[in-house]
Every structure is written in C-alpha cells, then in structure tokens.
Image (cartoon, rainbow over all chains, first blue to last red; front, side):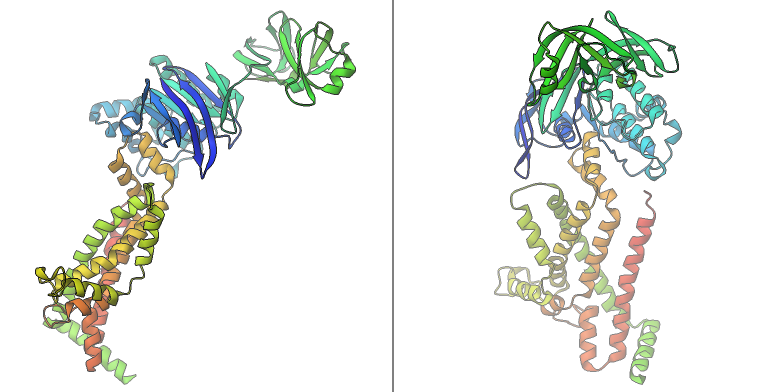
Length: 331
Length: 231
C-alpha cells in the first residue's frame, strides 16, 4: 500500500498540494482527474519518491519511506517522458541492470515487454528516430520491464493516437491480469480515469475529493445501431439513445448541464425524453439548483434558481428530463 | 613588418630544429597543465554536480562564491600561494616554492572554480526529466549522476577544455610561485614574457605558437572523443 499522509507540499512558499490521506492499495487502479496545473504531476512525483513533501510523509506498507531502495518498487511514467542516451533496447535494459538481473533474464523481459507494447521493431533505434507516441510506449515498456508494485502514469495517452492508446491500455490490462500491479493514473480526461476506475479522485487546487458519479452508467453497447451510429442502450428500466460506433462494455455519461428540465415533454430533436418525479433539490453553488429526479433511473440536472422557481419544481413533483443523443458521452 | 616576418621565420626554424630548450619548456607546460586540469576537474566537476543537483542550505551563496572566483586575478592567487609556501608561511615545510608543483597548485586553485561553475551550469542545462527517469528506474545516486553526465558530455568536455586552456595560458601565478627558473619552472607563458622583454621576439613567437598548438591539440582530442558518442 502506497500512501501520502498529512502532506502539505509547497513551491516557493505556495501550497500546491494539501492532502490529508491518499492511498493506492495493492493491485488497485486509482485515477486522479483534474485540469492542467491542478497538481497531478506533483502528486505523482511525491508518490514516486522523486520529491520529498515539504510536510507529511510517503508510506509504503505503513512505513515512511524515501530513497532509492523504496523507489525500486514504484515507477513513474511522466506526461512527456524522455528516453535516455543509447538504443531503445538499452533504455529497456536500464532498470533491469540497475537491479543486477542476469543477462538472460534481462533479454527475456525486454523481448517480452517489447512484444506486448508493439515496439520490437524499434529496439535498435535511438531516441531521435522515434515519434512522440512511440516514445510514450517505450517509456511504459521501460517501466513495466522492471515489474514494479506500483505504476504511476501521468497522462499516459496524451501523445498516442487512438490505436497506440489501445495497445498501451491493453498491455496494462494484461500486466494487471498477470500479476498484482497497482496503477495510479493522472489524467485531465474522465474517459482515461474511468478506464481504470476502482477509485476516481478529483484534484483541484491541490486538494483531493471523490468524484461524484452523477449520470454515469456502466452498460453493454449493442453491435449495431438503429440508424447510423445511433444506439439505444438499456439502463435500468429506461432506454438511453446515444451516438457511438463503439460496442461492448462501456460507460455512458451525461453532463448535468446538458439536460433540459421541463414540466411537460417538449417537442424537440432530443432523442432522450424521460418523465419522472423530483426526489431532491440541492443548492450547490450560488444561483444554481441541482435537480435529482427518478425517471426510471436516478438522473441529475442543473438549472438556474430562476428556472427552478419558474418551473415550480418541488420534491415529489412531476418533471421531464430531455437531452440529445449526441450529449451522451461514451467511453 | 620585416621585424614580424623575421620573428616568424626564426620561430619556424626553432620548431623544426627540435630545439631542446623550446621543447623542454613545452613539455613542462603540458605536464603541469594536464596534472592541474585533472585535479581541478576531478574536484571541480563533482562540486559542480552537487551545486546543481543537491538542495542544501547556503547553496546559492556557494554558487555565488564559485562564480566570483572565476574572476580571481591570477597574480593575486600567486601572491596568496607565495605567502603560504614561502619558508615563513604555514606550508613552508613542504618546500614547494619555485618548483613546478607550486605552479600546478596555483593552476588548480585557478581552474577549480572554472570547473565547478561551468559543470554546475552544464548539469543545470540537462533536462530534469533525465535525472527523474534514472531515479524512477531504480538508479542510485552515482548511477543517476553518471546518467546525467552522459547527457551533458559535450558541455562537460567544454569544461575540461576551458580549464586546460586557462591553466596553460595563465602567467601571474606561474611567475610568482614558479620564479621562471630556466630548465625547472620556465613555462611557455613565463618564457614568452621573458624573451619578449629580452628582445628575442622569434623565440617568444615560437613558444607562443607552441602554446596555441597545445590548446588546439587538446581541443581536437576532446572533440574526437565526443565524436565517438551517439545520441
């Protein structure tokens, strides 16, 4: 178990991270989402023992740690990784040679991890001969080669195209299926986060908070749609229309701000129109009201206070939620 | 112009004739230069590494001191060293005054801040992700430093070249603590100064050309070494 406990980290006197406790349990998949500059990379560097927190400690299996010995159990792949001088093979061998692993085992691991990440053809090349996406895959391969207990990934698919990202995620999934590997991933995309989401945390201005899973549904997407990419997906007792070319297991997400709230069904282009009853009205931010309704499943919408007043929304009262198929995000 | 031309002709003739005194002075200069460069860089480059990579109290002040020491007047260093090595000085017992060792010590003192300051700048110029990558892959302190040094190899080679160039070109300290004794502590720079003052322009020019040649050879050798490396 890798933990940050009581961490307040400062740069030039400014607090950039303020975390009471954050844990990456063995074998877990933890994702941290947040905008650029929210402190994700700093948090990962602290977890990777590459920086010491100004205050607080990093614990590994309950013991406060620092230094090279503990670092060998944790490996970080940075957002824009760099390759060391030498060939790609030498890069993959670096961490293994540091650990004094025998030559035959080094060769076996390098060949194996290169095959899994689809970089076997690159092994003799040097860093300046690679694209950004290839560098990122090599960096992940280099990290996996040393078989860490915890793999920290900072925006792992930021430089990869879709196919390369799929290869990368598949290799990570295979590795996790093969052995207990904890993955902690930082991303500004919810899509990346939910791919690994045993636990998704939001990081904003250096503070962590749990991500409220509003309007998120794990579904099985059918192979064919009713017209083009329009698919009707069963969620609880309702059917949500979504435009996607994906099939199989997926997550549907509808942003609360993308839902129209009315008392009567509206004549509109929205493919999703659901009638139900208001279960809760909450004021989260000044001027807005969060409307939670049971429309067969629980959905959350956000309206202005003025709109809520004009519509006469009250708990238990009737309500209609509408949203377009294209407003449904699929990942 | 005849004067210059005559001087150049005499210089070439001395070089081609293999004049024992000229080559003796050149070899002594090379010996002192190499020894002083090895010591100055051997001490200065690691100090530069520490200054560039390790956060410690007073680091900024230490960097300022090292950078200021770059501008040490060579004759002042010679003077201080003279005080230390003279018979009444605290290091008088070693009896190094007016020996080539005294010149070498002065050169080390002069070249050390060059090596430290330029090495610190070279290491600071390396992408910090290189160090983090080596560390996260499990490298300890020494292997991490070696990995960073490999990335900064061109700049570090320039540090060595600069240190050597400074050492063979300085005159103030060599004159003060060496004494310019014929056959013992006469280096290229002190000899050039002496023969110029004596009006032997051809000999001074010959020695000056050798000095340039030495600097050129060291540069070529280092560039050849760098050329063997790949990205």
